[in-house]
Length: 416
Image (cartoon, rainbow, N blue to C red; front, side, top):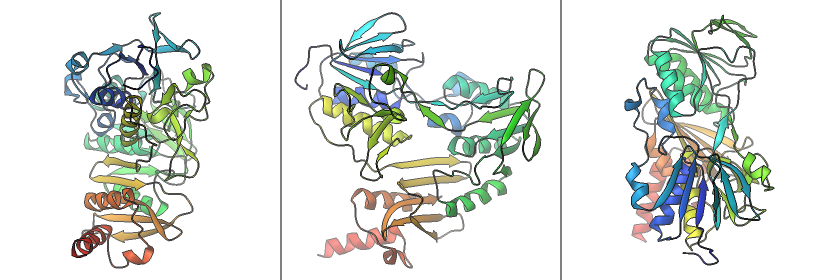
């Protein structure tokens, strides 16, 4: 256990993947002081990615829990469900909660995540218009989808495309409406997006890019979506137009905030080193990015939580984990390793089957990111090479793949 402790221990605000990673790592590292988790939801901490991959109609169908309740009890973790934090007093080192409790801390970890951006159009409050963030959301959308015939998905990001494919498998007519001129405009290269779009359209999804939603119409319940390109019939609308970090607690407490809680390389608040931030709410420096970055992924939440847990337990290190992402969109598995900038040079390479494809991003003739469709082996090879910071040049991939390159280099290392 780290020094300078008053015995109040660690308080984690947030019951998601990042918060769970903090507390499980603390106990695994031998930290013995009190550990308290303040969670807004009444569900045990769970994984969010499965919610958009398969919509559910009954609570028992959802298998997203991280660990059973006994995990927390056996490790003496005080998990307070439905009792989220309402204020932080950094001078007194206490957190106030919704039930009126004041919880002291030696170390405070903000794992508050992000919230969906609201759909800013008239009619967004109608019945049949939903966003997906939580288990109750997934159940509501799943039940609505069982009877829906015309589904409009507003937003062509990861969540929108995953939900569109689920809706297609339920037999609905599905239209994706995206304001930008292409799908996943901030996440994948324009070159790979073209192939991804073609596969969605081939699978039965209608896609409208460069299209704005003007209003949602209906008498109490959604009937149609009015866009600047025409009117779309709809008995179910699901939107996913991005997320905003939940950093209000930090801002109100006087901590530095800029599209997330601003932290240093060790994920400590630049205002107060007794406070850390992890996961979707943290804005931090990263060796794979220019300046500060805020990452929304399971990998980032898990790795950051573990790093802070180890630091508090006495093993500090800067955060340098390679960012990687995935998205299952029906028959398409999109995987990304590294961080691509808009100015990077992208090379497309087909795999050994028509369904496999890779986009390699180079910066100053050095590989910095790889995007793959239905090619897990190439994704894993990319992660290994990028994590080890093995230099890969454009010429190295002429007539080759990263998998072949990695195998050749391993063989060479063995021979030498």
